[in-house]
Image (cartoon, rainbow, N blue to C red):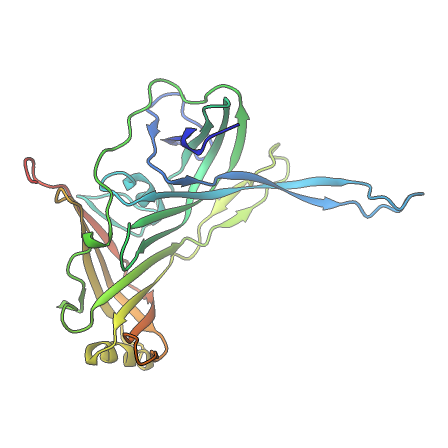
Length: 309
């Protein structure tokens, strides 16, 4: 019998994708869910014999994937954000690049003593969900190159303790600006989502001696999202430009209770959406989809000054 409170995740950055480092410090992840799992692909036999019974199946491969889900907090997921962007934090600024970063991730059921190691974990997809009221949730969709399990831990040394920065809620969202103009008072923003899909392609390699993929190759970085606006003259001005494909700049900060800040900047996004509707007792809101066009977004991090409350 196992408890969800005893499912502990540790991770370490890899130098060679798919190879767990023998040196270095493992870190303890702050997650609300870890669904990483190996799933074999199979094919059933088509053999005709002297019985009508199935002749069984054979494993043809292994899909190793799942989501790492956590409550957004400053400094907690910076390595995974960098992997998602295929970039590095340069002077505390992160943007889309072509730098492959992978991790070995151990999912441990500590109360029953089973340990599951996922190697070559890529940040294939990611999302940030900012609700109208509630916690900001970060999801990293991982895909891995290899997997093994056992009854003893794969973690070496003493893992680094998890971060302790406060998690963020919808009240952490600061002034949302479109083309440099605040939306406050003109088109209230009530919810947003941000999605990144690195469009990973699975490459199978014969003779590799393993069930997992031989390689995971990133292709297009598709960055999309949604935004919910109170319907107004300003919202109308934004909505109607879908006909012209005008690109807007969208920028807003996420500030935790200590003053630590992430500033998300999308210099060029195109909006799409239908005219809103609603009953006579409803607030009219426009739910628009957006897509990043041509110019890469950035995330800028800024730690609060020491002593700042």
